[in-house]
Length: 142
Image (cartoon, rainbow, N blue to C red; front, side, top):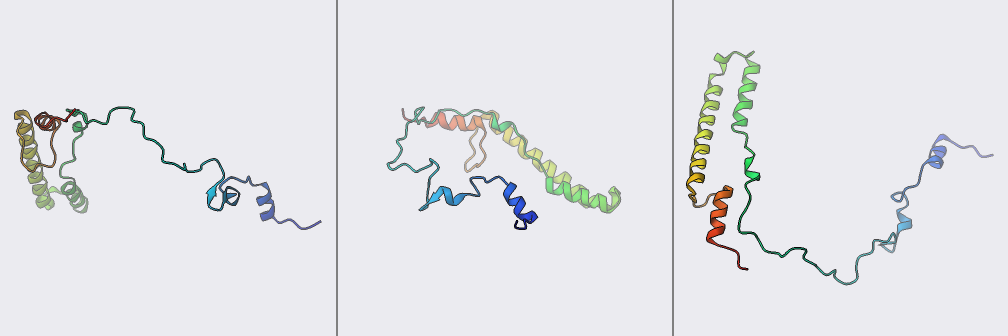
């Protein structure tokens, strides 16, 4: 009787998966497991008409951006380094305060522009109300 090592026993007891038997499934580089590409182009069937709506919802605008994250992390690092003595980190505290004031000022300007319905030229981030105003000015052809 031939000597059987533990590696051979492990291989004999192991299940053979399709991944391990890739040579069985790939003959001449075409799969033989029922997944063949179509010979002719597959016709596209539209479930709904491919027309944009004249309005957008405001659901995604409810998330808030984190303000002054970098300044806050610098301040925490300074406070940890100085054993939480605020007098040694006054420069970082002032930069965080100025960043936060700037953020609040821009937020209030943006809210006022949104309430008034003003469109700012070259603005990259428009609110849903501003987008709806633009879409009403330029409706989609039907």
